[in-house]
Image 1 (cartoon, helix red, strand yellow):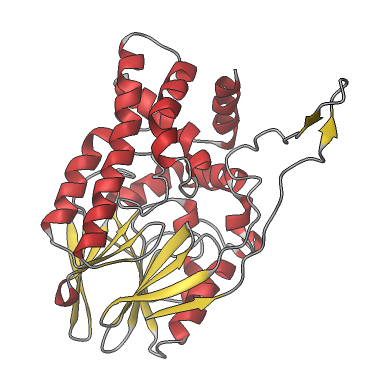
Image 2 (cartoon, one colour; image 1 turned 180 degrees about the vertical axis):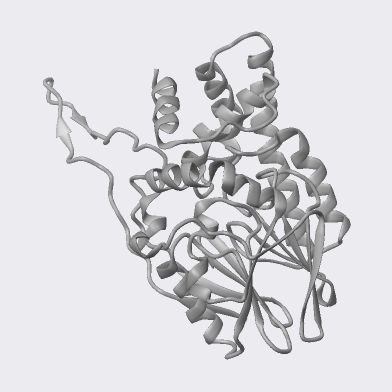
Length: 345
């Protein structure tokens, strides 16, 4: 079952057509906006049933959320960036159940995933210990950075009460029972961040992966671990999931679609890192790495959602990791623009 909500608005970033001094027609494009500052198009929301009482809230490449309906209450996976956007998830939940929302699980610390948590009024907000540590280390900086990069995703930002802190954390895994329904929350490896969690619902062989897995959407690797990501995808596959709610992109229903998304995510990550490693090894510049990644990835992925948004951050992180910087450096609004300036040269 797929329920759709909302409408799509469009934007046009072309400047007026003009002729040059010889009278020849030319089309004049605006300079490329940084990250997604120029993305103002609203996305159509869908709520897709991926298992019995399990749903993926998707929005054409915008951040996804998950819904797990138990006997007595509901668990939400990912909280969106603001309480106003979280309300859109709540409205979808109320279209399929009136059970109370008791738990919110946050697969990692990124602002677009966590800052809307207050809207759900859940008794428990759950993160891994590692993810909470990253809120301490870089949560405020990440908020400022992400808000600058993608202002549309922070609709109603004035309603954010502050950083989102978990009420409950775990070191490797924990189990929650929603009545009789068993939900396992686990860390199975580093990938999108060092604190990534997955949520496994064994009675339906369904997994909510956060941004470890994407579908026809670019992976954001700016805080990632390229050398670990493939093994983490192998760990996802070892569960033999029948359905997956990915971090972005359509819900994945059936083994064929799941396997295609796992393979595609692996290809995206490997193609990025493998293009950067030889550049870093010979002492090339960040701009050299950028050019190499564009050559390798544009032919395969340039039409993916948020591809241009992710690319500079992915290249910068791959360049760091290839030079031995294991712990991702903290992104700030200032560092973002400094990096962008380097790449424009």
